[in-house]
Amino acid sequence: MKKTTLSLLTILSLIIMCSNLANAEDEIVFWTTEVEKDRLSIQQDIAEGFAEKTGIDVRIIPVEENFLAARVTAAYAARSLPDVLYHPIDFTIGWTKAGILDSQSSTEVVTSLGKNTFSPGPLDLVRVKSGYAAVPLDAWGQLLLFREDLFREKGLETPDAWDRILKAAKALNNPPKMWGFEVATDPGQTYTQQVFEHLALSNGVRLAGRTGDPNQEINLNTPEMVATLRFYKALSRFTPPGNINWLHTRIDYLSGRAAMIIWSPFILDELSGLRNDQPVLPDIIKKDPGFLARNTGFVTVIQGPNGSAQYGQINCIGITLDAARAPAKQWVEFLLGEGYLRWLSMAAEGKLPVRKGTKVRPECFINGWMDLDFGVTTRAKVSRFYGLSVAKSMTAGVNGLDRWGLARGKGDLISKIYGTKIIPEILKRFLDGELNAEEAARLMDEKVRALEDR
Image 1 (cartoon, rainbow, N blue to C red):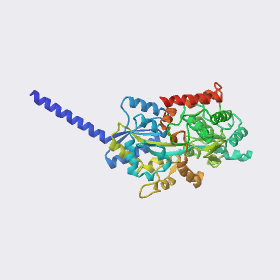
Image 2: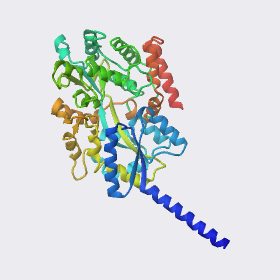
Image 3: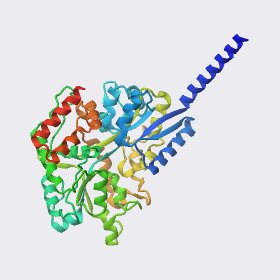
Image 4: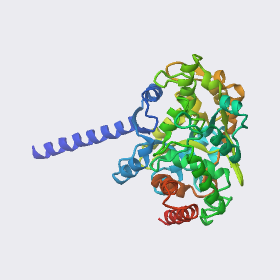
């Protein structure tokens, strides 16, 4: 009787174990930084379509982007990583080196989909010795937005170069009614790094040399960096006091209180008056819907004394080393295939396709994106408010997006810089007068070198 009981318990245990393994293959966990309610709804729709096709459920977990690095680090330590991670490219190489992302699985996905179906620029930025650290999913290029109507009134030139930007900021500054140029100053925000990096890149500031050699020494203590710091401080004089973040600049521009800001194209739906929860004050005052959108100009590439650049963000989808790899790869391929245009549709203005098409239809995703609507309360095509040329230039610019270090073998270091926010912290101390420009450049150089050695 005792032996029979043990045998039955053993069989029961095996059944439970096999059931758990089957369940593991029938469900994967997906972490996403697209946390807004409407975007989560679209992601759930995509997941349901995937489940109908494959029988695999996707559990979607929203994670705020500003806390993503800490959450991933904690999950890695606790051996509780999700199967798939949607994340900014800032972390891709570093997480691969740390043993979080599985480059083999991502490389197999790229090979299966066809590497020539992707825009080569974004794909090159996730390249590692073993293939690809993650799979690029979407991208956006940072924009300088400016009030064309106010520029015309003052006879100002398009603010596409440092001297023109500074001249216009001074001419249009009339606080508190109007701020000439709102730059980011909050040391705890990734947005501050993005705005500062855009201007630094425009003056030829690089983490290291211009080749892909990862052994090149860091060198931020340069005349170009000192000049960038001084330019940034000059612009901050036309910015409201306090810690200015992405929300401040967006609200002030939509309220008609900022003549210029630097922002991602995600602002385009609010700017167009397509969200009831984001009123556009100039439209209301003028009693002219679309007034601010029609009177906003866009600068993509900023020209500095020693260079020019457009900062860009590429978002990737990575498969973790702890993943159920077969279903995880199926999910990634689905997102970049049948579910791709639906994914891009959740915010078409800020989700440019990095996969151009399929092997059979090479331009289908580019053409499909052109037909997508954007907005929340009301929907419209980008070309309705900004013209077809703007829409085409947005997609064409994906290959030329610039970033510190990614094309120069410093992807691991980029992860550490964005994770610690060391550059915005030093920048804030400089803006507050604790450091002069030379001291700030030296300290940035010192701290970034120390990060590389960790």
